[in-house]
Length: 445
Image (cartoon, rainbow, N blue to C red):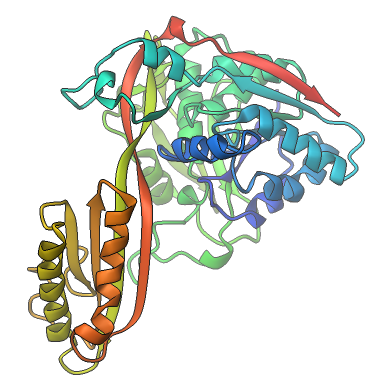
């Protein structure tokens, strides 16, 4: 059986679109995966849906579909994505809308539901992970609860012959594992192949991170053509062995270093990488450069899947008010420090000094604290004050105080910015597998 070619079209919700279009047009792919959900993304999408029931999916969904649907439909490439976020059904309808706009003759979209377990969470009290609290501590503030579905939830969608599969919360590597299971007929209890499929998905899920993005360090780790970095693809064999590569003519690099860095990304225990479909074991993984921008990967294994699924909870956690102002020229640091002292006193007068806040000089101590920047006299600094508050009105006062430094602070301040944002925090819990009931709905032109 020939290799299955699967590409990564996105590593996060705001990722570039042109590399995915290039993959769709030149990649000779069997499947193209867009992984676009971070921990907080779905909670923020839930807020958008609460304002408009037709929203709640990825903001770039239509733009991405306009870029890749023509080539994918023409070449028979299956698109798989979690851009459904908090509203997969509406996302599916949006894909059909784009297909009509592009005058595609036919299109089948499979929508995978069932990850939204907020009603179950509201009816049950379970412990929060990494906390001594339970879900009850979030009463009145909880806005979303989404379980991480596995590849098994996507298989009915693929078996339906769908051209596009839209999901909400799914474990990132499962988006890649599902088409491999479907294409090769891997059994749900074949832990070795599932483990190998998970390592392929893990390497591809962050897109350009494995092809040179996020590793460049001039003079130490040089990455050619970073502005035109190509998104990766994998050539996967029936036994799970694979080669990670990228399209010829694109920027970036795929080598043992980039693949090792991505392999270790967000990995706590390489021998027990917990996934809904399998407990993957990466401890025996072997990476080998087999050609320019070609790295083979094999040796992953696995153990029986967990009895519980992870759930990400999104909840309201107040507001952050922020203000910034710049000082430049001789004495810039001293004037910046005076501005911070003034702001600290103003917080006291406002009754905000007991709140959690950061007051720093960007360019001096914002990243690593005061000690590393103590021996430097910068030409320019930027004052930043950010305060976490209970109300929006309090948050607005923070930026107002920074702006007031124009006429009530040190000399030469300029470039003030103000912002207020609601804080959507996340927590995690475990849910019994049987409490989650995935469902597949088919939409067609």
